[in-house]
Image 1 (cartoon, one colour):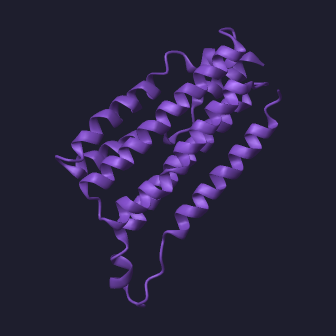
Image 2 (spheres, rainbow, N blue to C red):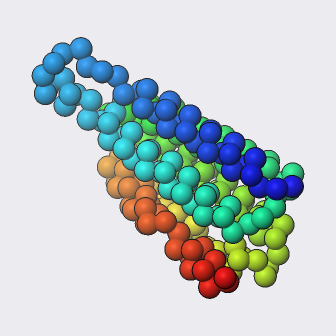
Image 3 (tube, rainbow, N blue to C red):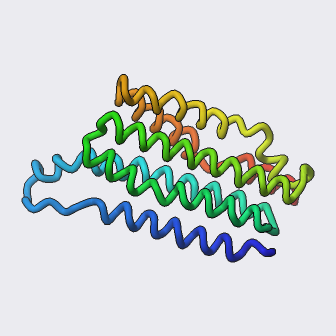
Amino acid sequence: MKKGRIEAFSDGVIAIIITIMVLELKVPHNHDFAALFQLWPVFLSYVLSFIYVGIYWNNHHHMFAVVNKVNGAVLWANLHLLFWLSMIPFATAWMGENHFAALPIALYGFVLLMNGVAYSILTTLLIRHHGHESVLYKAVGSDFKGKLSVACYLIAIPCAFWQVWLSAAIYTLVALIWLVPDKRIERVATDSL
Protein backbone atom coordinates (compact mmCIF):
# COMPACT_ATOMS: atom_id res chain seq x y z
CA MET A 1 0.00 0.00 0.00
CA LYS A 2 1.11 3.55 -0.61
CA LYS A 3 1.78 5.88 2.29
CA GLY A 4 -0.23 8.96 1.22
CA ARG A 5 -3.43 8.16 3.10
CA ILE A 6 -1.65 7.37 6.37
CA GLU A 7 0.20 10.70 6.19
CA ALA A 8 -2.94 12.69 5.39
CA PHE A 9 -4.97 10.97 8.11
CA SER A 10 -2.22 11.46 10.68
CA ASP A 11 -1.87 15.15 9.81
CA GLY A 12 -5.62 15.61 10.22
CA VAL A 13 -5.74 13.86 13.59
CA ILE A 14 -2.77 15.84 14.87
CA ALA A 15 -4.41 19.10 13.74
CA ILE A 16 -7.54 18.14 15.67
CA ILE A 17 -5.46 17.29 18.76
CA ILE A 18 -3.90 20.77 18.71
CA THR A 19 -7.33 22.33 18.22
CA ILE A 20 -8.73 20.45 21.20
CA MET A 21 -5.81 21.57 23.35
CA VAL A 22 -6.23 25.24 22.48
CA LEU A 23 -9.96 25.05 23.22
CA GLU A 24 -9.04 24.14 26.81
CA LEU A 25 -7.56 27.64 27.23
CA LYS A 26 -10.59 29.36 28.71
CA VAL A 27 -10.87 33.11 28.40
CA PRO A 28 -10.85 34.84 31.80
CA HIS A 29 -13.96 36.80 32.76
CA ASN A 30 -11.98 39.70 34.19
CA HIS A 31 -9.96 42.13 32.13
CA ASP A 32 -6.85 42.55 34.27
CA PHE A 33 -3.44 40.87 34.47
CA ALA A 34 -4.39 39.06 37.67
CA ALA A 35 -7.05 37.12 35.77
CA LEU A 36 -4.48 36.16 33.13
CA PHE A 37 -1.91 35.19 35.74
CA GLN A 38 -4.33 32.70 37.28
CA LEU A 39 -4.17 30.77 33.99
CA TRP A 40 -0.39 30.18 34.11
CA PRO A 41 -0.60 26.44 34.95
CA VAL A 42 -3.05 25.82 32.11
CA PHE A 43 -0.97 27.89 29.70
CA LEU A 44 2.31 26.21 30.71
CA SER A 45 0.71 22.78 30.28
CA TYR A 46 -0.54 23.82 26.86
CA VAL A 47 2.88 25.09 25.73
CA LEU A 48 4.64 21.89 26.80
CA SER A 49 2.01 19.70 25.16
CA PHE A 50 1.98 21.78 21.98
CA ILE A 51 5.74 21.28 21.76
CA TYR A 52 5.36 17.52 22.28
CA VAL A 53 2.65 17.20 19.61
CA GLY A 54 4.80 19.31 17.28
CA ILE A 55 7.78 17.04 17.90
CA TYR A 56 5.74 13.95 17.08
CA TRP A 57 4.29 15.56 13.96
CA ASN A 58 7.73 16.68 12.78
CA ASN A 59 9.41 13.32 13.39
CA HIS A 60 6.44 11.43 11.92
CA HIS A 61 6.79 13.57 8.80
CA HIS A 62 10.53 12.90 8.56
CA MET A 63 10.05 9.18 9.09
CA PHE A 64 7.39 8.84 6.40
CA ALA A 65 9.46 10.95 4.00
CA VAL A 66 12.01 8.10 3.74
CA VAL A 67 9.58 5.20 3.40
CA ASN A 68 7.53 4.41 0.32
CA LYS A 69 4.98 1.82 1.42
CA VAL A 70 2.96 0.62 4.39
CA ASN A 71 1.18 -2.57 5.38
CA GLY A 72 -1.63 -3.49 7.76
CA ALA A 73 0.69 -3.75 10.78
CA VAL A 74 2.04 -0.25 10.10
CA LEU A 75 -1.51 1.10 9.77
CA TRP A 76 -2.45 -0.34 13.17
CA ALA A 77 0.79 0.85 14.76
CA ASN A 78 0.12 4.34 13.42
CA LEU A 79 -3.42 4.26 14.87
CA HIS A 80 -1.90 3.13 18.17
CA LEU A 81 0.38 6.19 18.12
CA LEU A 82 -2.52 8.48 17.20
CA PHE A 83 -4.56 7.06 20.09
CA TRP A 84 -1.87 8.00 22.61
CA LEU A 85 -1.34 11.38 20.98
CA SER A 86 -5.08 11.99 21.29
CA MET A 87 -4.78 11.43 25.06
CA ILE A 88 -2.42 14.40 25.40
CA PRO A 89 -5.22 17.03 25.51
CA PHE A 90 -6.95 15.23 28.40
CA ALA A 91 -3.73 14.78 30.38
CA THR A 92 -2.72 18.37 29.63
CA ALA A 93 -6.03 19.81 30.80
CA TRP A 94 -6.06 17.72 33.99
CA MET A 95 -2.48 18.68 34.82
CA GLY A 96 -3.05 22.40 34.16
CA GLU A 97 -6.42 22.64 35.91
CA ASN A 98 -4.98 20.98 39.01
CA HIS A 99 -1.86 23.15 39.15
CA PHE A 100 0.61 20.32 38.53
CA ALA A 101 -0.66 18.04 41.30
CA ALA A 102 1.05 14.66 41.72
CA LEU A 103 -1.47 12.29 40.12
CA PRO A 104 -2.22 14.47 37.06
CA ILE A 105 1.49 15.01 36.40
CA ALA A 106 2.13 11.27 36.78
CA LEU A 107 -0.70 10.52 34.32
CA TYR A 108 0.77 13.08 31.93
CA GLY A 109 4.08 11.21 32.14
CA PHE A 110 2.33 7.91 31.51
CA VAL A 111 0.72 9.34 28.37
CA LEU A 112 4.13 10.62 27.22
CA LEU A 113 5.63 7.19 27.96
CA MET A 114 2.97 5.44 25.91
CA ASN A 115 3.50 7.89 23.04
CA GLY A 116 7.20 7.06 23.10
CA VAL A 117 6.50 3.32 23.14
CA ALA A 118 3.93 3.64 20.34
CA TYR A 119 6.34 5.67 18.19
CA SER A 120 9.04 3.06 18.77
CA ILE A 121 6.67 0.26 17.72
CA LEU A 122 5.74 2.19 14.56
CA THR A 123 9.41 2.75 13.74
CA THR A 124 10.23 -0.93 14.31
CA LEU A 125 7.39 -2.09 12.06
CA LEU A 126 8.35 0.33 9.31
CA ILE A 127 11.95 -0.89 9.46
CA ARG A 128 10.79 -4.52 9.38
CA HIS A 129 8.60 -3.72 6.35
CA HIS A 130 11.40 -1.90 4.47
CA GLY A 131 14.37 -4.02 5.55
CA HIS A 132 17.71 -3.43 7.18
CA GLU A 133 19.12 -1.79 4.08
CA SER A 134 16.48 0.96 4.18
CA VAL A 135 17.22 4.63 4.75
CA LEU A 136 15.07 4.53 7.88
CA TYR A 137 17.05 1.67 9.42
CA LYS A 138 20.34 3.43 8.72
CA ALA A 139 19.00 6.69 10.17
CA VAL A 140 17.47 5.28 13.35
CA GLY A 141 20.44 3.15 14.31
CA SER A 142 20.28 2.14 17.96
CA ASP A 143 17.68 4.87 18.65
CA PHE A 144 19.51 6.22 21.69
CA LYS A 145 17.26 9.28 21.98
CA GLY A 146 14.12 7.13 21.91
CA LYS A 147 15.42 4.76 24.59
CA LEU A 148 16.67 7.67 26.71
CA SER A 149 13.23 9.32 26.48
CA VAL A 150 11.42 6.19 27.67
CA ALA A 151 13.91 5.80 30.55
CA CYS A 152 13.35 9.43 31.56
CA TYR A 153 9.57 8.96 31.59
CA LEU A 154 9.94 5.83 33.71
CA ILE A 155 11.94 7.86 36.22
CA ALA A 156 9.68 10.93 36.10
CA ILE A 157 6.36 9.14 36.67
CA PRO A 158 7.10 7.90 40.23
CA CYS A 159 8.98 11.15 40.94
CA ALA A 160 5.67 12.97 40.56
CA PHE A 161 4.57 11.54 43.93
CA TRP A 162 7.77 12.72 45.57
CA GLN A 163 8.60 16.00 43.78
CA VAL A 164 6.28 17.18 41.01
CA TRP A 165 8.64 19.84 39.75
CA LEU A 166 11.33 17.24 39.16
CA SER A 167 8.89 15.32 36.96
CA ALA A 168 7.96 18.50 35.10
CA ALA A 169 11.65 19.29 34.62
CA ILE A 170 12.31 15.81 33.21
CA TYR A 171 9.36 16.11 30.79
CA THR A 172 10.71 19.50 29.68
CA LEU A 173 14.23 18.11 29.29
CA VAL A 174 13.00 15.29 27.05
CA ALA A 175 11.10 17.82 24.93
CA LEU A 176 14.25 19.93 24.61
CA ILE A 177 16.22 16.86 23.51
CA TRP A 178 13.73 16.27 20.70
CA LEU A 179 12.98 19.90 19.85
CA VAL A 180 15.51 19.90 17.04
CA PRO A 181 14.09 17.79 14.19
CA ASP A 182 15.64 14.36 13.82
CA LYS A 183 18.71 15.17 11.75
CA ARG A 184 19.62 11.47 11.49
CA ILE A 185 16.89 10.91 8.92
CA GLU A 186 17.67 14.10 6.99
CA ARG A 187 21.40 13.29 6.94
CA VAL A 188 20.97 9.67 5.79
CA ALA A 189 18.30 10.60 3.24
CA THR A 190 20.55 13.27 1.76
CA ASP A 191 23.53 10.91 1.66
CA SER A 192 21.42 8.29 -0.15
CA LEU A 193 20.50 10.63 -2.99
